[in-house]
Image (cartoon, rainbow, N blue to C red; front, side, top):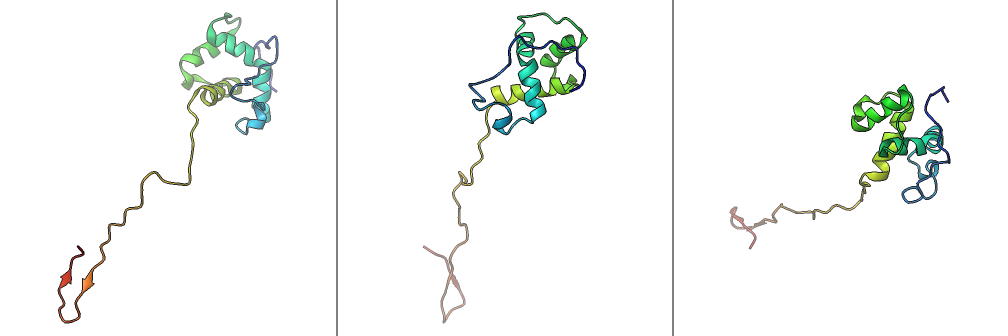
Length: 122
């Protein structure tokens, strides 16, 4: 991983509530993203909550990114925003069945053999 000034967390970061099998096994994060979250996640969470104050330029920029996600530059910031979106956002659910019923708007028309007039169904 590239050199960063970001502080390591005092312990490894896990989210057993939303990702009980780990970040990488969830299928949502790459191995690099998992490594970033496990290593720096505790620090990022503390900065987000305001429990600790930023000590360097990278951490100050991270606190700005929390309020304005479009300013994210580093992989660390993008990974944290992805984690927040997946952990705190609403899970999307896709189904193969549609809610709407299939409406057959075509009408069955009957024709009289003797007459070419169309008889509307009753």
